[in-house]
Length: 416
Image 1 (cartoon, rainbow, N blue to C red):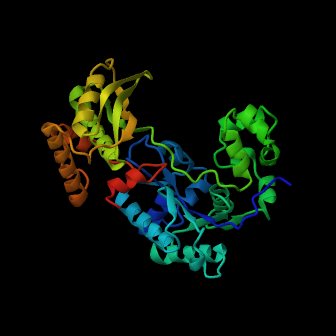
Image 2 (image 1 turned 135 degrees about the vertical axis):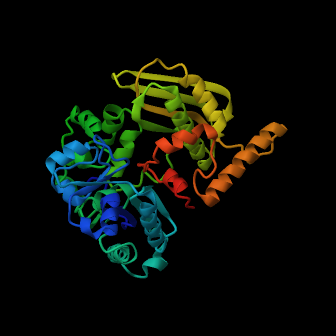
Image 3 (image 1 turned 120 degrees about the horizontal axis):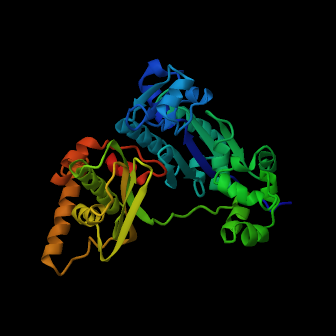
């Protein structure tokens, strides 16, 4: 009736439940069954970046201030993040996933996709539900008995992710042509992955109030009126179980930001921190094998004001020193005031030319030195060697856990 994809569901979405909080409960049995969470750096007004299911049940949400969480539950326990611990979990999860298919994609640190197309020899007559339950048992046996995952199965990545969130925690569900309509009938519009308030309001303006209304909407209407782009067609197909998301997202910028530990207007405090942010940005650029032409710095002040400046350069750059020199020129132009948050990002990215020989000896030397430093840090640990201008910044800025992707997480923790 609705042109639904009737192919066999061969995409599996794995979601590690409350990954960081659960990893801490696994490591600390005394915290199991108790409301707790993790934050990047403990302070009075720090934010909860992950909460256990016990905490979520009380209304403690990700992004909530520590004081708000404590007001809800005075016994709420908040720990600082422990990247090596999460890395161990992450690596074991990838190892388990690779045992079933070499076509895996980690969408974030705690979410991954397994594509079973062409993996009939692995399935060996078993259903994906059988495989899903087996993976659940392996997670408990190989990662920890307190660790739980949601498994979703669908004909495309969207439905597999929806299925993974159907019955949390520790659920396993499949969505295909046999139950897709039933699933949508029980969903609010903004329950759907990718439809937040902004998209929800846009759809509402055209009388699309529920998930079923969304499914029933004509492709022409979605493309020409609602989304006013090819994105309308993508959603029309995605909702019906056709794959629209099997592609790499283009990289537009690389950077780093920091909430200033002790808000200040003193250059001797802020400049080493800027240098350290530039070092981590340079590492990210080289890890992604890109160079930049543009650099921007921004600052938010304690009085609520915001300053931002950017500059495009004629030639590309990628070394820590080049990034810091360009960023410093801009940063020194900032208005005076107590800095609360600061950041840098590079843009206009192009594939790296580092591996190509240069006709200029000095450029070759710089590239060789940069490569040597990266190799030392890769072997002995991140920031074994770094610029003297970053010395104090490294002491001040604690490395945070990145969200929304895995590439930089892997870089920081020296994984392949």
